[in-house]
Image 1 (cartoon, one colour):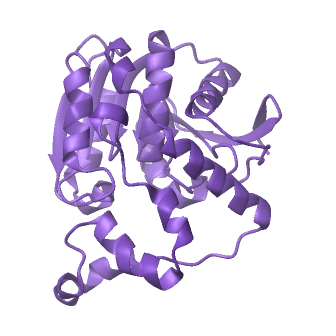
Image 2 (cartoon, rainbow, N blue to C red):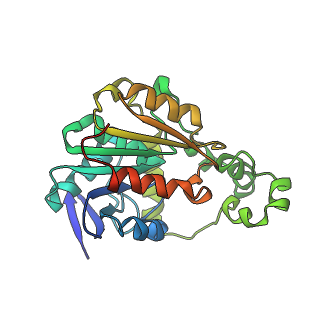
Length: 266
């Protein structure tokens, strides 16, 4: 099993494809398996590395608390382990927060940066406090969560768009106590995310993308990020927090930006 060590954390990772190098950073509570179809697609166009972030998936669950700086250092440690001096980064949701932390901490390492459905924190706006859902019953979460994913997701919407109902369901999963602890530690680190005053350090070509109906990381937050990074491009897509699978344009634009754009553009 491919792993590397960051202090007392054993990190599981996978690499696929050849060509332009990119690290993909995943969302809250998510692991490699959850995005395997997406990574498989991206791996057809370049060399893509992804790891189960600390506390999740096949990575270990060291004692907390965790910090956003630690998550960024884990990603840099993956690049070092692979011998990648520079690389592109794509971060989605929580992964977009980690990607920002990485890019402001080691801007010389990041060639291109794609930030999807995410927030800068601080004066730039924070994503919805998902840690607050932990204190609610399953029924309460099921009432709230669909509208967070997509503000259109009401019962009336699902009646006329039945195929969308699968996106609005919370699936209760039985996981071991250690992995549950890892998820909670991640949510606690997420709560403290704030790179707003450091975004000006990012100098690479940057794409910031938001879903028009996202209730977790609204478009205003994406626009705010782009406004703080010189030359950044902001795009709004049809969909909510899951716009990457709701709008067919997203993958086309992402692949073009990461793998096909000229290295010297901005």
